[in-house]
Each structure stands twice: as C-alpha cells, then as structure tokens.
Length: 208
Image 1 (cartoon, helix red, strand yellow):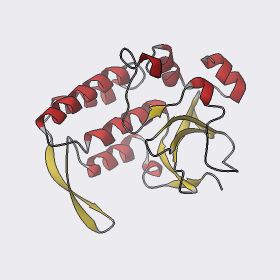
Image 2: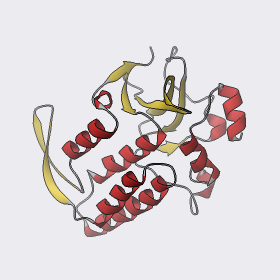
Image 3: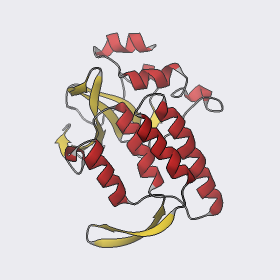
C-alpha cells in the first residue's frame, strides 16, 4: 500500500511531514540498516497495517488513525476529528490500558520534536551512552529540519553539543534522581510556550 492508497482507504489527508518521512524511507523497517529512522518510544506501523491496527477497544473514538506504537503496544494516533491546520491533526497517545488518551502534540512536526525532547531528558550516565544520545539528537535535528521549524531543529542540534547533568524530578509527590540534557520542567515550559497549555496533562476519552 502506498500513501495515496492509504488516504483513499481511510478518507483523510496525510500530514506532509509524515509523507516526507515515508517517501525518504525513514519509516520502512526493511531499510533498518540504511534509511530507517529510530524514534524514541515509537515504532512505525507499516502502511498496509495501519487500517487494521489493533486499537485494543471495541469502540475506539471514530477518526483515530494510528501511525506508530510504543514498546508496550500503546498507539500514537492522529485525531482527525481535531484538525489543527491544513492536513494536520492533533496527536494522541492512546494507552491500551486506559480509556483516556494524552493530548501530546498539535501536529506531526511537534510530535516528533517532543519525542526527541523526552529522550533528551532521560539518558544513561555511561559515557558511551551519552555519545550515542548525542548522535541521535544530531540526526533528529537534521530530520526535523526537513519538516519543521528551523529553531526547533537548531535546538536539538544545540542539545547534542551540550553537557548532560543530574537533576531531581518530582512526580506524584516523590523525588527521582535523573540525568539528561534538559529537565522535565524544561520540556513542560517548551510545550506550554510552543504548543499551548492544552498539551500538558490534558486527556480525551478515546475508547471503551
């Protein structure tokens, strides 16, 4: 199945950023050793498998189109009921064990940018792992520059050149020692400023 056939099958317009990624082989698992693009907490769903992807619900919210999934089987979905600009839709994290999905990003470039930021906030302190993280961030900077705002891409490139540090994360009234290129509070501020506050801890009922 190609992109045009997928559009016809699901009757929606595929976002341009995703279309670019597919056309350049970034989502093709058969190109794992060449062009395939690994993304934090996201494995690309093959085009032919998108229409029949298991959504874990008898009655999922109409208009959801999954395009990637996590290691735990949660689906990243376009919510085509909520267009945010021409050929763009907000993206939900539809948890398989929760009837409420997280409103994660307003469009495909911002989704990709935020997954990169999440990765940068939690890396292994090992020197080799830090170097690998820098390589990922630098590559993602180049890929984001192909589909999104240049300042977002530049930010990832700058993170790749920065020095990660330890910080304390407060979550559910507990403190956790973590290590990364930026903190969770940094990400929250970026999301609030660039995506809007509705993409921080807001949910939508997505299926039953």
